Length: 322
Image 1 (spheres, helix red, strand yellow):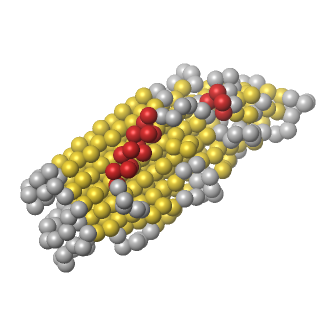
Image 2 (cartoon, one colour):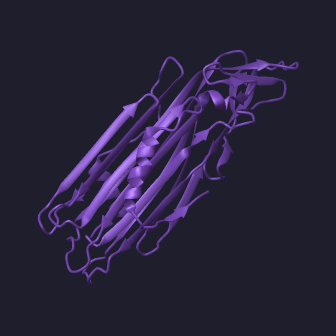
Image 3 (tube, one colour):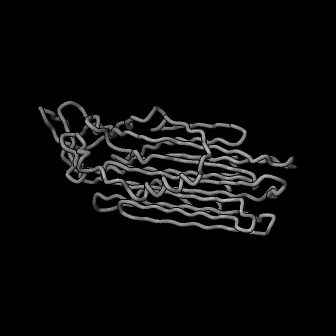
């Protein structure tokens, strides 16, 4: 199934980067992309390919869908939506392939259909300041940024009683989330992914920051006391679903609308005794995050993603949560 998902990505022609552009002040940005289509031809000689994208400072969404009209038995879609504020990011992506066809109609081996949704969001805080309290005298201190992630990955695939074929029939999905932190001149990254298909070939993997669970901290980085410093936090979610025959169904979902955020009620940074951290722009006071000042209203982008995901109807997909 991995080659099918890669082919769907080629249909979309989407490239994402976790690196944030350099800016002069604290800011946030959200970019969403979606695509749906057929690579090759159906037996009725149909071809289709649609895509959409959106970018905004605080919230963005993209959603597309494409039916194969002459056969009236195939539907593909992709969607993504998210929101960001200083201190938190919410992001979701969905992909769907749905077929009602049974019988002898098939794709050729080199034909693929699929949907893809991607979203990248990040924020930059540039007015962080380490100050001494209670007698701290060091001029440089080691910090570790603490983060909490809430959400899950899901994927599945199935076939509608296809005929015996001369090539492997497949349908399935892949979903992933990636987190990146830049602080003190260092970069820290982590990924988590899940895939599943009609043969129930489940694959789950995690690396770096996301290898140890949903509450995690970066490795230490050194900061000069009394000198403003900046951090960049980025999250990317991707969901892709595809099939190589018209009898295939697939779902994929990366749902992190519950946010990647600074801890609530606990310290934002691990900092040596005798020092604290503040940021006026992000609402960090004495190393505590003011969630009431940062949590946004429910985003219409995320609501849209939930609506498009519901197009899967009664179809169920396996979910892997950490």
